[in-house]
Image 1 (tube, protein in one colour):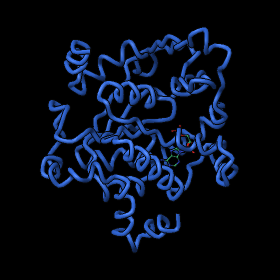
Image 2 (cartoon, helix red, strand yellow):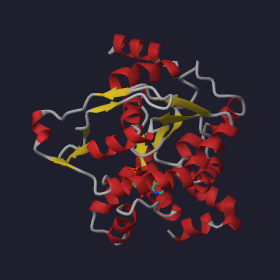
Image 3 (cartoon, helix red, strand yellow):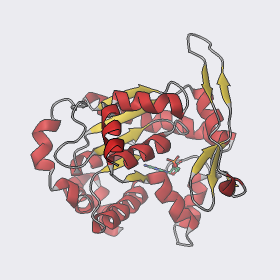
Image 4 (cartoon, protein in one colour):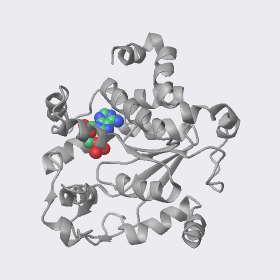
Length: 285
Ligand code: AMP
């Protein structure tokens, strides 16, 4: 942790890179090979570059980053790493950080960059020792500083920015449930947002749990209306600039979710030029 803190000081950005880079060594081994390719616009039509995917999912709380990142992770065979999950794992442990984190998370604030880098480095190291390569990051980077440090240590191929109307986001967060046993996410909200002010209407069926999960559902402590509003405010202040950071690099793919999973998933695959990939994968499965 001390080394990471040192690394995060602006004056020692190169040593910061070195430390965090250690956790990313599997992927950075191929960075020089792909650097020339990634200084151009991302090539969405070539979904399988010479090393595994290094993607980032951005988007407001409740937009569905976890849902779509996890589906793509299964499809592409790369780990889905959600910093929110790493924070919640730490929260549920009896470690020294737990109480400090609970206070921050339950107010809808962001955890410090140092803590996030520490949790993420550990997760990447654990994955590396199991032979993982590539990643789909969800909920990271959330500040310009996180994006800059990530940029120093590895090359991101593509950033998917999921978008949804704000009233729907709030309803989705309030309907979100998690099975306390298997950890799967569900949503009990039945959304029927009317068309207004030029925005199209939107319907989303609930994503209900199977019977064996139904009695074990819990709600995240930060999914209350007040905390969701604060998380949206924090997103607009701290995380929206990250969208521009990647837009300026030509890596941002904006994706307006047209509805729930049945409508959105095929369209997302199409936007990523992966629709054919899914068909081919299921044909050989
Ligand atoms: P999420 O599940 O992505 O909504 O994250 C839950 C909470 O974890 C957030 O509200 C933050 O308090 C914290 N968190 C997750 N990722 C980050 C990050 N990259 N930077 C700072 N805090 C984070």
